[in-house]
Amino acid sequence: MTVASVRRVAAAAVAAGLGLVLLSSTGVTLAKWYEETTLPDTQISSGSLTLEAGSTAPVQLHSRFPEDQRTFAGGTACTAPSGFAACRELTAAELEGQLLLPGDQLLIQETFTAAANGTNLTAHVIIDRADVTAALPNGTTVDTEFTRDGESLGDPAEISGSDPAELKEAEWLVSSRITTPQQWPVSFESRSIDLGALTVQVEQQAP
Amino acid sequence: MTETPTQKKPNRRAVKAAAAGALGVALLAGLGTTFAKWYEEHSIGGSSLQSGHLNMTVDGAKWIDVNSGQTIDEAQFKMVPGDTLLYTADVTPDLEGDNLVATLKVNTSETVTGDLKDIVKVKTVVGDGTDTQQTVRPGDNTAIKVSVELRFPETTDDAEPAEDKSNWWGDRGEDGTVNLSEIKIELDQNDNP
Image (cartoon, rainbow over all chains, first blue to last red; front, top):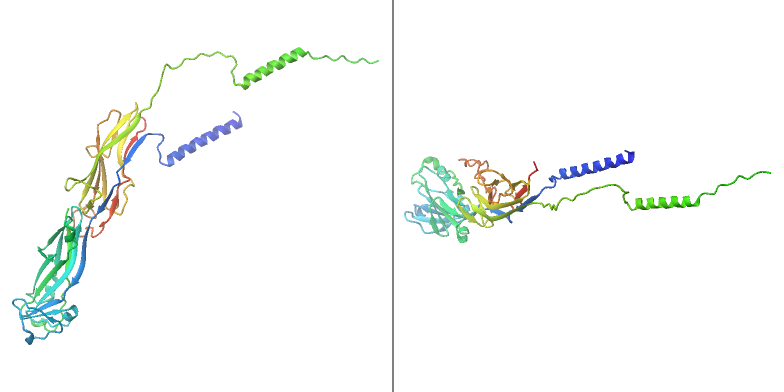
């Protein structure tokens, strides 16, 4: 074998080797059949739970004492409910400067929206204003009612992904009646009270 | 007086004959014609060799909501934690080839995209059991069920929801998408034994 023919054999061997390396390194299997099909245009979306705070209406202060027996700091008169002698509607700023008396009742009304978006989704709307009782004298009660689009709901209220669109967009109204006892311990004289905040939770129940 | 040596003249006939012979050899060699050698040949009697094929058909593809057992339009479905969706299809292989063996599988490797890809779990099954692939041969012409399960785990650690909500999703995964269009049902020829 001449030098020239040895070179030709070597060049051919290198070329073949390079071909194998290229095929192998690209992950392509060598000369085999295959058939494949992709899933048809498939995009699946997830749902959500939404909760958005709304507004707070003026707070009503219901007094067991008539207006001539106590002093209100600002506000406008309103109709007193049964069992109370006077009513005052107060903004948040006016409430801050108000002097509460034993037996007073506060009516706080707040709005929000809540909705469930999901084919199988159900959730509970849970409302909590319990922290206010810790700030007021023993015997203070908190009664909370809530409505959606004017319709009264149980506690907790259930929402579902299958609710119609108008219900998902409807406004929720929470009315909290905080009624203080008619007798307060001396320790509550001349002190400020933090009424806390309304907590609304939306919690998935199913699936 | 000097004598001039007598010069011999070449035989012109011999030169012409040699030139003609050389020309004949050159012509034969140039045409690539072999020189008179013995040979014997037989044709392979009427043989026509055919190749086989490797095909498959996919029928009856649908998505099922496992929670309700209903067939769904996956484009309209809104998935939430705890949901499981199942894609199923019937694959009928069609193989022909004396030594042909192939593997049917669903390839999900790096094919799931979208912002839910790290949240949802994808599992594939080929056949009626739990196998992820199945060997098929010529003659295996009955439909094989192929499924892709897409699951949104209830919790971040795929365990029971904790009382303190430490493993709840919060709002993670809300209003997201997962794209499965690149998932492939593959029938690949096996290496010959």
